[in-house]
Amino acid sequence: MCSIFIVVKMKKEMIATEKSLLEHLLADIDECGKDKIVLQAGHFPLFYDESQEEAIEGIGYWGEFSTYTLELACKIGKYARSVGKEVQFSFFVDDHSYDIPGGTLNSTQRKNRRKRLYQRRSGIEAELPATYRQIMGERGFSEEDVLRHDHKRSGRESCLYFSEYVLRESAREIDNACAREYVEFVESSQYFDKEHSHLISFVPFRCQGHICEVALEEEITGLSASHVFMESMAISATREELYQAGKGVLYQRD
Image (cartoon, rainbow, N blue to C red; front, side, top):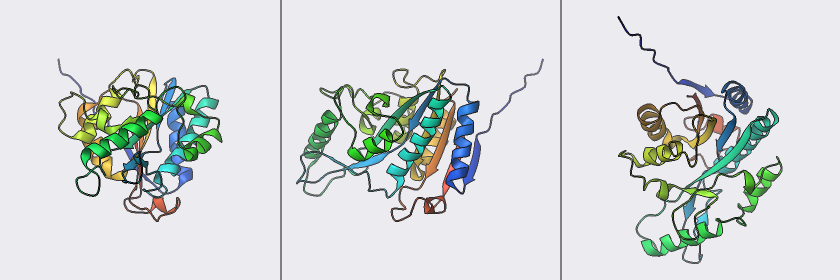
């Protein structure tokens, strides 16, 4: 008896316009066969300044990336809800890339500033930044639709933000830290139900290798997902220009 192995290839396509991107993602919602749509968007970094008691939410530091991806996610989420899907948002925060030695603050001071920010963004009364609240509110979404991250720290058990530092503490034996944090999110049933959920994730293009070549190709199985890779370093590009800036916009259906 011979066995036949079928290798399922990821569908990848460069996208030239917002209209085309939305057509792909809305079709994925229709075709995925899942009850819930989880939207990862609005990704941004944290910064530190001695004049501030908390870490600074760098929502505009990556140009249009953070706010634009959240607006796209809200458009998609509104459609998903209209066709009977449950919708949740998850906000990943890059709290490590700019936490580097040097400057006027030592590592403990930066850590304490992260702690204070995360505590303020945790709990039942916590609110997103005003810009994000407005973007979501205009399309009928609020903090009630945000997936919370338990940081396993006092006062941070129900945070509106997923801390990449905390996700990287996973015991999973994955050398690539970026891939390890992504796998920890997708494979933790506390946060993501692969059987019933479809993930739509907007990711900085610089993370594409870590996510695709390691997390998706080597570590994660049975995932229904759509990934959109977009430049976060093209800080002067308009939203329209992001489709041609740098590596452009890559759509991938897993």
